Length: 109
Length: 116
Image (cartoon, rainbow over the protein chains, first blue to last red):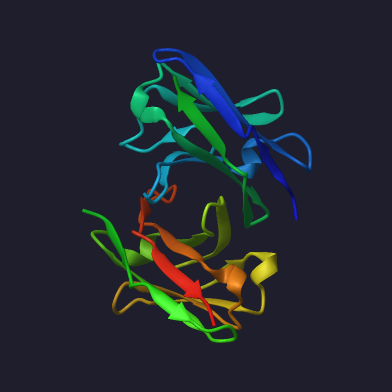
């Protein structure tokens, strides 16, 4: 099974910009991996932010954007807010089967 | 509004089975599939599988093949996930997700505890 790798933790200053990435053990990430990004706060169910690389849901704040960057999937947060402090997970598709990354703990400090 | 409402917490003994339900409302059930995800205490998310609410075809995580079965009941707009031969490391919160393109909606989660 493929392994999806995320930064274990990142810190961003309020109002700052940070990019979270997800790499695949099988090689470069492409749109064919249909990358998803999820946000999870303590004690809550995950929330889907981004699907199919860069598509947002109606509730996804405009400051979040998804892309492919340097062979990885990327989630960029521009103008971080205190409420963005959370765990973030990516999810890739491998011919139908899907694999989560290990998650990134984002601290806004 | 779209809602996915899951069944309540369960406590099971090792070797038993559990069946978690996920009742959908607020959209046409057969328009989107249902994904199942679990999260062990203090751990990350684990993709368990997906079922088409229209055709019933499934795709399961390799590590759960043979122990998991996902089904749907279109008459009640409910999806089910059954996990058999439970072990202590199956203790987790189980989530369903779906309801839109891009799995936009999540159930509240169902805690399954496996303990002797």
